[in-house]
Image 1 (cartoon, rainbow, N blue to C red):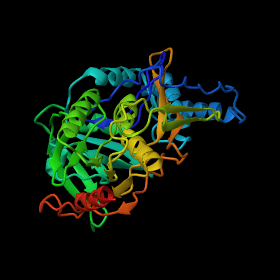
Image 2: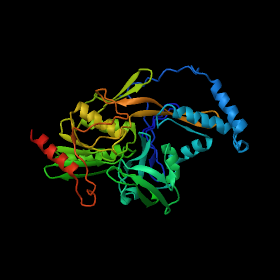
Image 3: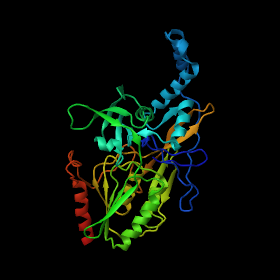
Image 4: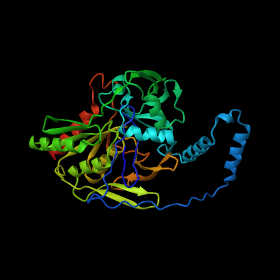
Length: 402
């Protein structure tokens, strides 16, 4: 979930339900290390299509719909705009009527009751990107990749993430009922989850046997850079000789935080991520140090809940450092959204670019494939089994021995 503040330009990945919905804001523009992003060129507003069909449809609806007296003309326009964006086939390009646009703005600073999970749309299905550690969804047994079929009895067919957010959030200590289907199940199951004020965790770390720093990064939020800095100093003082960086179920956060953290592992000037605009223009965001871990062996843990900023960092380490990625294929959220405010208070969120790894690999919809695939067992949490971490520790010890 990434935003870029440049005039009224805003970068967004997926909607997050953390106390209802929490959006991380802010790519710092004008940074001396970053090249100037190239804006896509303006496109013609003319349509190479028979627009009279639209008016024929409007006339038919107004002339024949049995309850047209209760439908405002402006709502017909809003519906047409929603349909136009739907034709793009992009779940991240959406339209907000004025009331929803205002609520969307309030969400940026508001605190709501939620269940603590990030959701998105994948292959036209509403899915859980990642449950957040220590929150109601995780406690209820929700997992990354779970398909959400119903919310309080309402089908999620053709439902976008923003609409789902409205249904899932609510008053603290009230319940939301989700019908969930998971790969391997014969039928869907109902989950009743009590809403709470959700706190987004950031970072935990410990020193494993053999002087291996095990770092769990849960979010690229505003405090992640400083917490990573503190961890880095402590681990270096304690003699860390290798690191396992755990990005599993990390749905993302600030873009500049991903670039900042990458700077600990890459040389100054190394590419971290490419932004590929529809015009063909590209901008490259580069590492700016401190490069303290540039020679430290590292293994990265990823899964289907690793999205957005997590995929940017994992892809950079895989491309530039040849770091081994262990776990499961990442989510595949690699497009850039821009919010455009319209004159009546409504707004358009539309994908204007996609992220590529330093070597030019596409992230969006494809995700990043780990070097070593290890499935997490269904009973892993209950029985405290973590074969993915075990494999990562095995590999880092081999790397350290070279």
